[in-house]
Image (cartoon, rainbow, N blue to C red; front, side):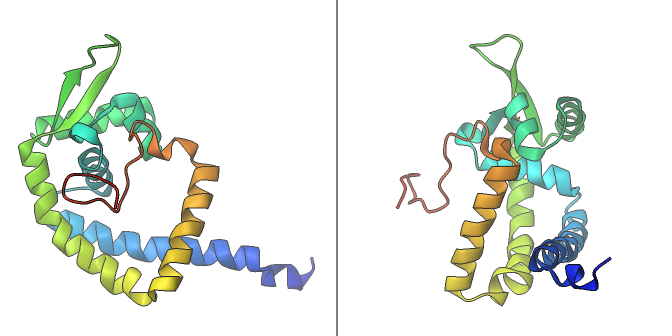
Length: 169
């Protein structure tokens, strides 16, 4: 095997992405645990809170999180027992239901987010100047959209830059 193949920038790029993800995930998991959440529970709360009406159809939640529909059902069952979510019937499709964040779920998220944002700033975004961060976000979105086209299912085009009324700025 040609030793130079391991110097391929494609292998380096994926390796760096995996290493960065592993390092950030470990820091996030420890911080989530302080607030009684698993990483997947934090992801579910965040995705629901960022969605219109703080809710998503269960199938859209599964698509966004890359969990199976049965995996989402188990997570939502557990979070519903803990009072963080509730289910609501879909008025247009009796076979579907929505997962909806409760007030307790939003409160838990509000308590968790300051520490989460500190970790993001210290170990991720704070390591990059604004131009590098913009380029990284653009590249990550393109890769995400290619490998995980359902990542925004049901979100109806959430825009990160919005004013206080939810209008894109």
